[in-house]
Structures are given as structure tokens and as C-alpha cells.
Length: 195
Image: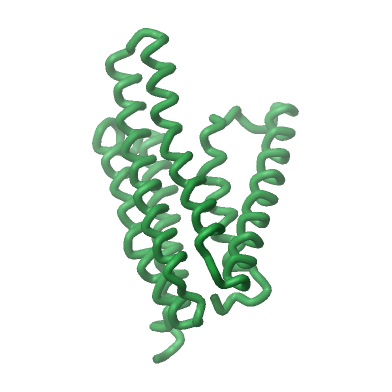
């Protein structure tokens, strides 16, 4: 097996493809290059790359001796939670934009859209409970601490840029994808990156 076909390299290539697709299609929609429902559909479709990304990560974990039943279950739970999040977000945003419901309905929509985040938190908590290998559990804790630190630094920096009128206001729901990017960076930059 050469370096390009190694499971670790493949998982990083899938990660790059996913990030480019998600942020690229989001940018295309946000800037109006691909407007309307086509832009939304393209953005939502980019999240389907999570499926091969997770499969490639699992192959890399198995090759590095870091696969566990708890991690496989966690991956499935996170895929379901992530795809549910995207679907509910798109549906809720569409309903709010095109039907212009009254305030109580919009509040209910906002709550419903946030619920899949609870599924993500639950998946992480169950992973820490179910993982029997102390080393693998420590790695997950370390990744979550790196992700949380990344989010805190990014949010503080951007908050100050916004306070000094250097950057525009961003919606608070972006903390979930920023934290997820931090989680990926945590995995990439851990001391022993063989897992």
C-alpha cells in the first residue's frame, strides 16, 4: 500500500473534499451564485460526503488499531444527528422564509431546529460512557478539549473584531460547525496521530 492509498491519507482527502464542498456550496448560495432552492439543495447535498468521510475514518482507525465498537456506534449516531440537523435546519429555514409564520411558530421552529444538536451531545456523552478502552476514551476527551478551546478562541477573536467594527455580525448557530472543525483539528493534531 503506497502513501496515497493509505487509510489515513484517504480519510484526510475525504475530510478536505467535505470541507470544500460544504463551505463552497454554502458560499455559492450565500453570495447568490447559485440562488434559491438549487443553492439550498446543493448545500444540503454536500453533507452526503459525511458518509464516505466517516467510512474512511473508520478504515484509518482500524488500520491504526484504534477502532472500537463504541466508536463505530458513535460514528453512526453522529451521522444520523448531523444529517437530521441539516434536514431540519433547511426545512425550518425554508418554512420561516417562505411562509412567514407568526412569532410563536417561528419560536417553535427555532427550538425544533436546535434539537438535533442535543442528539450530537448525547452521542458524545454515550461514547465516553461506552468506550471501555481508557486510552481511546482519553483521546476523545483530548479532542473535545481541543475543539472547545478552538471554539473559545475563535468566538472571542471574532467577537472583538465585531466589537471594533472590523467584521460583520454572525449568527450564533455557527458555533456547532466551528466546534466540529475544532474536533477534526483536535484529531489531526494530537500527539499520537496514528489513531
